[in-house]
Amino acid sequence: MAGEIPDLHALERAGTGKGAARAARRDGMVPGIVFGGDVDPLPINIPFNKLLKMLKAGRFKSTLFNLKVDGHDDVRVICRDVQRDVVKDLPTHLDLMRLRRNTKINLFIPVEFVNEDEAPGLRKGGVLTVVRNEIELLVTAGDIPEKVEVDLTGLDINDTVTISNVTLPQGAKPVIDRDFMICNVSAPSALKADDEDEGEEESVDADSVPTASDEAEET
Image: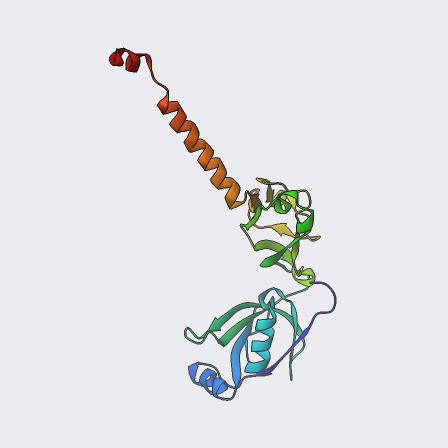
């Protein structure tokens, strides 16, 4: 995440527990809790429509926010969980964690694939198979990247891209300690089918060659 930290406005929630949470939802709010740091947890409410809009915009869980609550100092937070209704899939509760700018945190960062036109394998009709569309990285809270770019330039059929081939944002490193695959370029279906047919023809031809014992039996 580069540039200015966006504000997240919330209201302090009076009371805790299921009763207060239900009352908040009836009033068009989504209840939440702010935890972490050296202070007590803070119960909050966020307007349902505003939260839903931010969730639909994407990357809500990988964005560092400047939380503003009347009567409290501004604090940097990141979302650790959004609970949703199991039927309607709408937000019913959220958890926010206080962070310092230099705090290290594990986050899933989305992957963006670029320069597909520069990949010979794709120009030949090959298929880009995405193994991971996001990568878990250890990042600094004050410098969370929006995405990780994977350059497909020069990729041919059967080529792969692993994490060691990717230039990661400064200060970020993968959580998984191995050279895992991110994507590969596989052969087009028609080419696979042709290869399989050729293999079958070769096996049939080999079986049809008469042996010495076959000739002896015929005589």
